[in-house]
Image 1: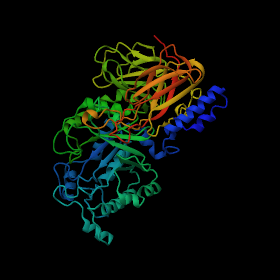
Image 2: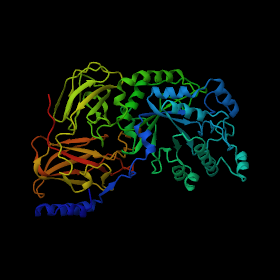
Image 3: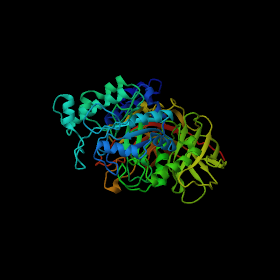
Length: 601
């Protein structure tokens, strides 16, 4: 999957037959339009991103004038909040129960009255005399929880409740000219001015969570000015992945199997900072509507684990009442998490998703209906955690691909019990699991350093160097042309037992066709594998369908395959023609060739 010139430069040290093969392969690939691409990423992560990168979760608070019971007067709402006993420490303490490192305060929200819970010299919407924002920032800083402010781009809900919440006359008088706050340009100018007032007044505010973009902001280079004035502040954007943002947040998705597997609906590849925001209550709006909505504990624990196991942040929406407190069922959930998370915190905090660019065993569907995720400790990469979020339908064991990691010890993290295990045929089997947790059975797996059974980086050449360079910031791109043929050269006749393939995580994987929506997974579907020693005579040894799933995928070749050249032919991908952004598209980060498996009984 690379242009011909790059293939030819590698042939100087090869025999004539291999040089001819390289030339032919280059000509064929040139016809497919494939190329090497590099993922857009900054040269180094800015220091301001450290908090988000180290975070597991955040607390999303939608709370404003139209929080039930609705208030239509700013002063009356402020009085109700104060009289109700609102205190910032409650929110901060609730965030800590969830092991959340930050709070996103969504009060300047288009459907909550555009309230500003801080004193402002800019007229136009509700602004409180009491500095709720300042109090929250101060309380959070004292307990290690950062505050991020939600900012909306959208004025269209200005009269949704039958009253006008945007005061164009007052803002026009302030600016000395007529400005219509109910239109996007006018609202954009008003909100633009608020960004700068907040930056000036709150030096410890950690960032802005921005609900899409306003044209006025872009035209007046708002983000560039924030970077210049407050380089310490982070920027997050809802549903849009733009280079100006530190993080892209993906709004709640449904319809996955399992239901908690929200990463299967996310289309932003690592190492992009990515967040999944979702409502903890099972029903209702993003804000408190006067009802004590039900909370599905298993679903929310599963989401939390799934996101951590995929290097995605969980932004959990809990619906604060006017006094700031949560309804009883949401309060019950945070109290549950306060006790549930600490025994397994090491497996969810300070970890990366396993099975991706950071190494680790294979996540996803395992034996007998089991499903789960793998996390890898950043501080000690030889420690992995297997999270069984759906236990097997029968039996007392878990079996998953070990990805070449030689296991030394397996322990139930909650109980401390040592568990027997075996390794063979590329899989780790952990036996005698009796204490299945209702939501997340966590197995602490200690391994030896490095991986076994793979040919080392640099020893296998591909017609596109991006496929075997060990660098996940480069990838091969077919540019929409199928079929695709990839040739791997082992340098001489060697054993080839399997292929480990990391496809780019830039498209969803869950099958939405059952919901009347197009299948949009841009991943390998139908494939064949052939082998050759001379580049002229090829023998097909494997044909199959690769599952549409995140993380590393394996194609087993058998125990008796010896060859110099391997050819992977991809005839189809999963995405449907009705999903044009993904149809016939294929991007592959890395293909690794394995020569054997870890054996340990």
